[in-house]
Image (cartoon, rainbow over all chains, first blue to last red; front, side):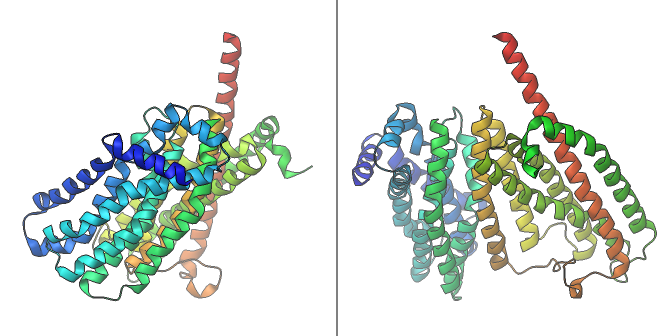
Length: 218
Length: 241
């Protein structure tokens, strides 16, 4: 499993595109919001947590298709399915790599984007924390969606249609935690709920994704 | 003689063919009589005026919209566990009906909300979770239509339905957490305390029963046509060989 993680990481970094692409996409989405809403910093700082969360969601979505598509095409996935590593483990490794290559970099640049949108010092931290706790859920849910559409020729649009509704709880709790933190309310409950969603997703979705993959590999 | 006998498509077709007319007629009778009763023979509400009568469509539609998903969940689990094709097809058949009911619920709610709350739409937990339910239905139907192999499609959608149920419930509670509501609490429940007044209650019950019958009739109809379509395509495939 660790070997698989390193292999996928190497592919993600060396074979162009995947790694930086979703990060750049995130960046663009977020800096487009001021263009759409207007340069009023006060207003922007109000919508900043939501903006960053939506940006993170879309950036995640963009890179989902490549989680299984290449491995499915060249038969790697068949080999992985017959290897001693259970398919659930493969799914978890894939989701982890997806998080390391999209979620985590996104968390790192979010404070800078937060400042661009007019968030002040400490409130950026809440945003970072909510993204840090929430993006793993986005990755594993997305991996499930990618597994569902693994065999399809043009699964891209369908993938977003399937995955986005599943993102709702994460989005609500994550953006709520950031917003409450920034506005100075208590955040413990929303943080805990966000963490709950993340852990629940990681607990159940590897099984669902693996069974879906088995169906698609039949 | 067990319930599972009807997992056999032939037996299912036979039985459903016999009962379908009864369900349809009773559904029509109950909906028409319930609506007439509700519209013409109940008083206007002292606060809501005549708009209260939207209730007779809104509540049953919403009730069926939610329970259609629930029925799909059960049918999906039965398909995954026992591999009865009728079950998978019934789940497929229920989805478009669920969508229609969700839309009816949302639209009638908006029509009622405009004079009563002064707005067509409010991001209230109940309204929002209905919108979310709608999204889940859309995804489910889209997946059915995207997968070519019928058995794989049934498997994939079943798993999506189960996972979706978990996340739909999560979303439901997330929306409550996210925004305190404007929508009134359940107007029907098993303990009598929360009921709407009896004058409205009895016609409502009749319409609801009618909607449930209508749902069953439509599911049977859709499932039957699905089975027949499959047979037809099997025949075509055989002739080609």
